[in-house]
Image 1 (cartoon, rainbow, N blue to C red):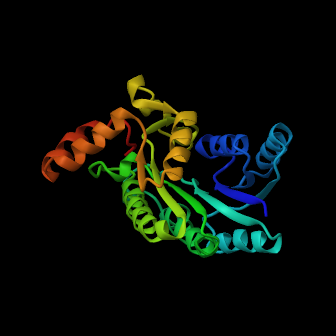
Image 2: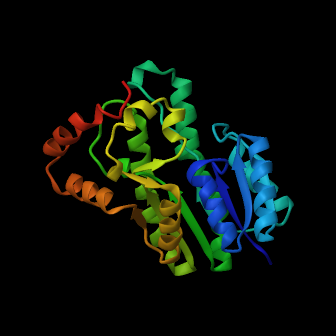
Length: 264
């Protein structure tokens, strides 16, 4: 039976790069995003270039019924899901009270609830088949000290790291590998969407990685069943410093720097 990989947020950035690299590795794909035309274009191109089977599902993961919709589509079409890449996500700029609750609720649904639900829906079959790969795209923000502005983003990513680590421990005896992928600043559309491109573009180039390297490291990490992967030497140093210093010092150290890339 053919094996398929689901990729959420597949129309751009890291998600699109996952589609490219997995297609090159022979994976059949089910791509999830909101932009139908873009999904159609990517599916057609990957099918032509790599002779794989491709599907797409137009879904806005801020809707509470969307994970079930994705699962039902796969069941109806008897698609064997052997890999799940939970990549969809975005940041809500500004201080907490400056955004309506619905804005925060939608972001939590996309980056937290839908991730956990998709894992809950597809993990049992992977466990039954004794084979599965799950990559939850988290962030370096899940390791570093909290900052003012974008206050739900780091908290959500910290949850994903812990959740992925726990599921990794449960899944390893059943052949299911789970990895939290934790990139830092990456060249994608992410900062254009949340309106911080002008701020983060002032950061030094050594702080940045390209999506190709982030994704290839993520695929390698999940194959090795590494519970979390922090991309890049600089980011690993930042995470280590944050975790090894007292909380008060870490908060003080990162608070001053965060004003350069956190929109308030």
